[in-house]
Length: 359
Ligand SMILES: Nc1nc2c(ncn2[C@@H]2O[C@H](COP(=O)(O)OP(=O)(O)OP(=O)(O)O)[C@@H](O)[C@H]2O)c(=O)[nH]1
Ligand SMILES: [Mg+2]
Image 1 (tube, rainbow, N blue to C red):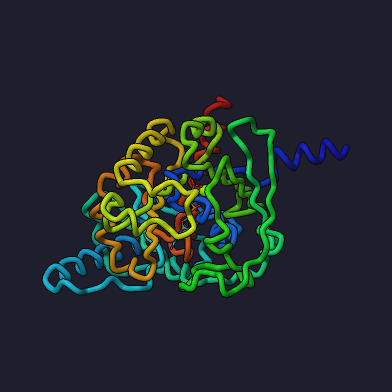
Image 2: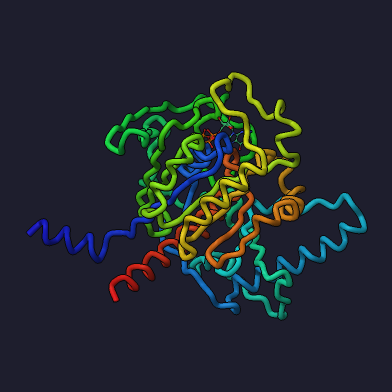
């Protein structure tokens, strides 16, 4: 009887499981991003994925795009006009955006008609709610800091070899000093010094983010030959691309952290692009694909957002389920926005796939 009940639960009521493949070159901050996701406050309910051009949220995006273009025009005449500092993350996607549930403050209707983006790309500023919005008190999906664990699986031998390392709550003096975004109450991210190069794979398991049980596979950059083992089973891809103003070829020495001798040198733009193309070519178009432009210079990041988009134009989305998001794993900037784009869409696409295969 129990097995019948659990079968019914698994089939009809259990949250959908979404497998997210987290890849990118070595030392670009994938594991740091995973650690950030662990301490980020996400919504538990699902959000609705919309295609509808007339949604209030989209109207808001169009408005933001129009304002940004105006700003750009102004800034071309006066050079030093920084972007507003209130945008913790941005998403550019070709087609879909996520519509928060109606109780969210972002669904404000605009009375005046707003022009559409001219570039054919949607620039999505994170709604104001992303600014340190720690509102949900329920804390059941992420382990407390002193229980945090990083499950490392050695994929070179087989998936059966599993080692588990337990990490301890970091002393406050070690935590990154910058402003933190969307941090869960009473949690702190693992300090950078505790994040070591990944030899194998780290698995992050989340009980409920946007109504989905989420598994994040963080696969080490130096083992990129083995990434293909994961392509078939993933429902979404999070590709971390480290963005810097200058290519590392010209400032490699500045990039090297002290006591990081076991780390490979940071990848060049060209190396990252080749990797990105390789992964992109192997992932079907219907699988949501988010490029997370990881900008380490968080405080100056708002000032550079536009130049980031311009200098990374070849990365801009060309496929329907692809998006580009600028963020920072160290501070959490843009992380919530990225997951809010990725997970609901992954859930939706998974349902479409299941339906098609059942027919
Ligand atoms: N200042 C700063 N440093 C960061 C940030 N993210 C990562 N780092 C540093 O970069 C190092 C490498 O980050 P990881 O997350 O281990 O990189 P990775 O992509 O997982 O690398 P592999 O596991 O080798 O593939 C960390 O130990 C940090 O010291 C960031 O947002 N800001
Ligand atoms: Mg790693």
